[in-house]
Length: 292
Image 1: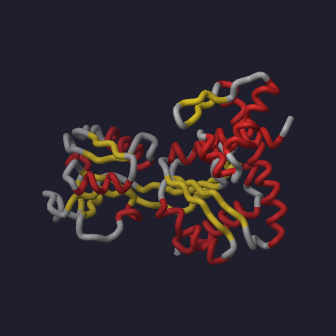
Image 2 (image 1 turned 120 degrees about the horizontal axis):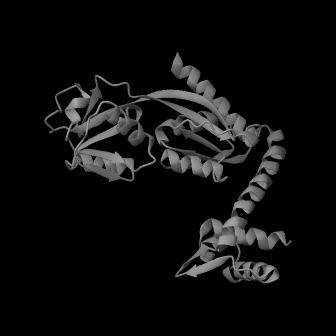
Image 3 (image 1 turned 45 degrees about the vertical axis):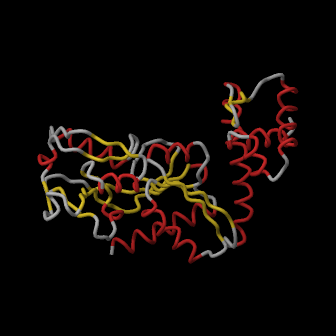
């Protein structure tokens, strides 16, 4: 099997575009297209369906992509293993997190210890973060959703708490606390399904037999804040993410435990890589500092 052709396929599958893949691989588009075409012709298969400016994987293309993700992840691990002997003078770590506020302090500590490292941080829902980790698209993850998947190595990093927030001109703005029952038939602004904030809060409401009014679903935290500011409903956020400012007022829920643990996670098979170990060590040291 021609590894160059396989790598060309992998980059296109990752980018879902020949143009973007050529840019990422630093080769011309005709060269990349020719390599993929040669692979298809050698094995008499179609790996992609062209869709406008992008491409879509065929069924066999999806199966091959699952294999190339593991193949080139292992290649990266071999490079990282050998490079790790140079005391982490350089290297690139891909981090996925459900909150930048929880991941950035770990990265800052790691950067202070190893200035030659570079990082890529992807933010998404807990479900998205877990998928990126399992698909070898991230080396480590910081997330609130704990899973018993035996493929994963996990440590608890810190605990945070969900709070509510309203605009400063809201009827509740002068209150410090509310009860869950106050939310009966009240509009809420929540993240998309798969978000741990939504999952925990909806489970808490259901356990208390509280049925809110309309739920406005927003994909990003910034979008949630703007929707709350515009009066669409009460927002839910981690206390660490609330921040300062005059536009909103925070509300604690007096009759519910909304504490949520945050975890640092990696694949079991990658836990001994130097970069991954360094990230876990930085998280553990920061967790001890927060605890005290």
